[in-house]
Image 1 (tube, rainbow, N blue to C red):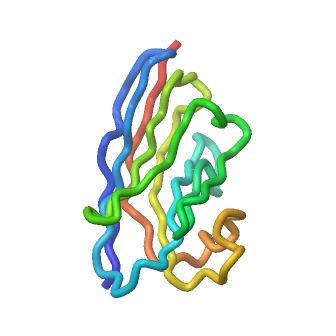
Image 2 (image 1 turned 135 degrees about the vertical axis):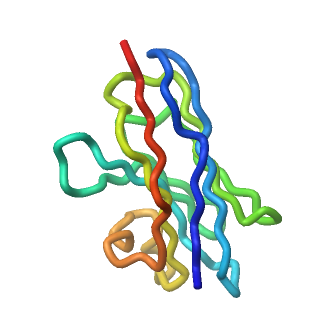
Length: 129
């Protein structure tokens, strides 16, 4: 069974930084597409924030480009989201998601998350002005 465990959320003032972590377990291969998605208050669907492919290529939502960085540590089976220059608009519940069945070339678009293998429990980020 695939499991994702997130950590690192919290409250911070605008301009501050946070790092989210997502530890994955249960995969028997390393070809896993992983990403961070956010559920904004009052919304019912998560939006793509950052995705990392098996070759370490990445994609970001326009609103976080230049401020957020997604990375992974293969040895620890962990994906990170470094969030700098945080803004109140970054507030929300952040979810880590992973899927080991994504076809080549389709990882970074993020469409796979709707039927992903696994989701983490979510970690809340609150940015105050």
